[in-house]
Length: 138
Image (cartoon, rainbow, N blue to C red; front, top):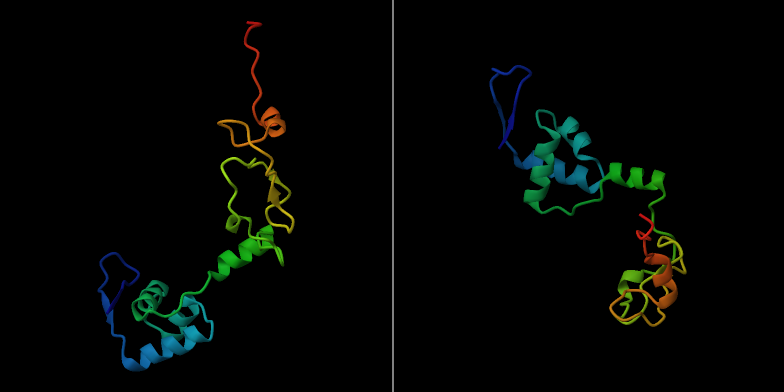
């Protein structure tokens, strides 16, 4: 069951039953790629959150958020085509972990040169990453 509130604070609660017919309609609309809001509107007397809850209880396959996909597309967060997943390549503790290139583009990698003792980077990259502050002038 799903509870829906009216507009006022003291309004009555409506009870919506998920009949077999409504569940089948939900499944059909979900498989067609409709959003939870669209499904709620089409079913009537049900909220978007009730639709999402029923989808989870039915174990229907989840889909990526269309809002998040659009936001990521606008910001350029889509993975580059044929990009190498660097996370799948393990960098040894004794290799330099300095990133080279853009992680979203092919060719991105870590330096891989021998790392300094107790440091994540090679000597050249340690010189860039770690700089001593000169406090002796004070």
